[in-house]
Image (cartoon, rainbow, N blue to C red; front, side, top):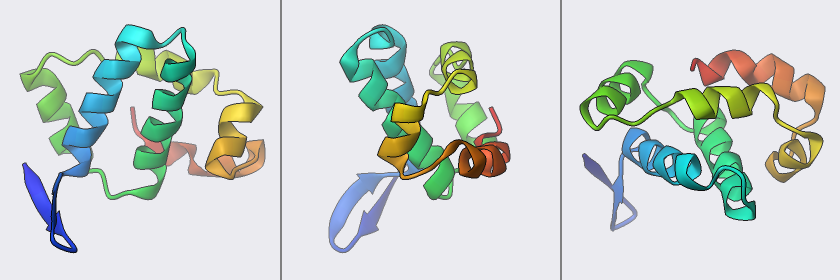
Length: 99
């Protein structure tokens, strides 16, 4: 579940995303949790995440996506600024989140 990019071995986006979601779930009410959310949104919006693979891995490794879904519904302007987006741009991209 890795790939090679410019000589580096990296996890595929779906694995990296689930690692971030697991971290987010345990620290969502902290500053680090906010950073996790920014990273998660960046992966969902700007990388090629395969929904079916993500859902399969989430089931296999028992990663709860519900706290993430709730957090996405209440994304604030500061989080959007970190992503370089405004509310209008985020609204247009939201369908890519598919959670």
